[in-house]
Length: 120
Ligand code: FES
Image (cartoon, rainbow, N blue to C red; front, side, top):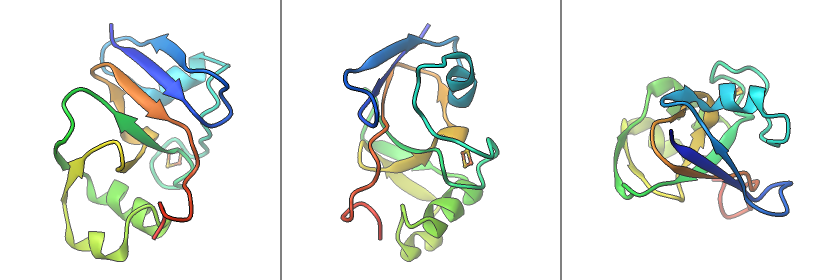
């Protein structure tokens, strides 16, 4: 059972939740009222659920779906030049959409909003 630690955002201290293996992160958020992760569509289109994720296997190549990439570019979490890429370096600096994430390993999920340097 992977432990997911949520940090930053409205949290004053890390909040750790045990997920079922491969549980979608938004399902976890739906069942845990105290997780302040904002989301709206739940389908990877609105960009509201953007987070940054850390885990033990980073850095590593990440094949990102075109839909997730395009939404991240549209909301300026990735630069326009990212439209030419399918593969990214999975690192704690990479923005992801929580809609696309599952609890497949222990994760640290940052809920901090982007700073002016984070968005392109
Ligand atoms: S909730 Fe809309 S993109 Fe994730």
